[in-house]
Image: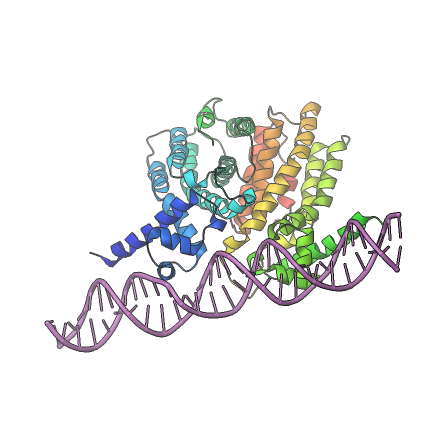
Length: 212
Length: 212
DNA sequence: AATATACTTGACCGTTGGTCGAAAAATATG
DNA sequence: CATATTTTTCGACCAACGGTCAAGTATATT
């Protein structure tokens, strides 16, 4: 049995504990001792595997997006599928992953300003955008080669789309009503279709993304 | 001498102290006692004016953007100036304000992961986008009426532009090299010009915005 | 002068993130 | 199997934190 396997098991135990606790309360109100207790290990052991409380959170977010990110990479490689379909699948893959613990948990007993989740959200946004950008860029580039998309800055376009969608999807940076989100999304689609010479309606699937 | 005046003086003293300290180190490494010490008052007094450490930060950010936001509102009202010029002025006004303490301070002796500034940045982004949105929307609406801009979702367009620019300007959510920022910006301009039937080049001033 | 109100303060409290040395478990070596 | 060596576990411990508070001082009101 390889060492990494065993080490991984313990690490997963800790991450599971944190993930559980995050569904109950906010990070700022979760102590390292609490994580240890929930994981059924001593507090000291936590610091054998992680350098800081922050590092645990980082690892959890990374783990949560391992699978959808892999999906994204595979998607980027499948050139026989239309770039738009692949984009749609990419966004779907993100949606379906365990973003659950990112969502607001208003039922908690403890109340701190909504801003307390800043850590989590900042990390989520940062991670998902930067990881997805290369794949989406690749997809767009292929769309340009196929002549289905007309635009000179594929990487920039990928980043713009990801930023807007991720920020609106997160809904904590700029809390919005579903109507407002819908409007922004429509605007983005209109801008993209007109700005990249895509046939109107091609991108309409984006509005089907199950926001919040 | 009105009471609010005196109270305001003390509050400004506290905010000044925090602003100073933020130029030296990260919030997580700034203690409330330290703020009090720098402000020349007792720690207890801080809690006479603010309910929490977080609230001090909120107030500082709000104070920092009072003037540029006022400028933005005035700008929105001046219909005789071209909407593009007003947009440029708006972005300039934001740049010139005291965003200094938002910037990364790599020279500090203490080292925590860059993510520690999450609070600050989250609040900065949230504040500046939501406050500027109505004004930019108004400017765009006027541009549409003038026939200078063609687009069906002015509010959405304002939000999209603000999100992308603010996120890239902040440069902490998605740390980028100046070249990458330049590329994204060029892409945004191209997308806007093509997507809203603006004459090419009209928006090029955006690339002059002194990014980081 | 007396009373009431607005403001100031630092000692104090409960908790926290993180350290540490020792113990225990696991593994390797003979 | 025993012994040596490394890896892993642990909770008492620490300094430091955010926040409270009762007691004090200034200021205004009568």
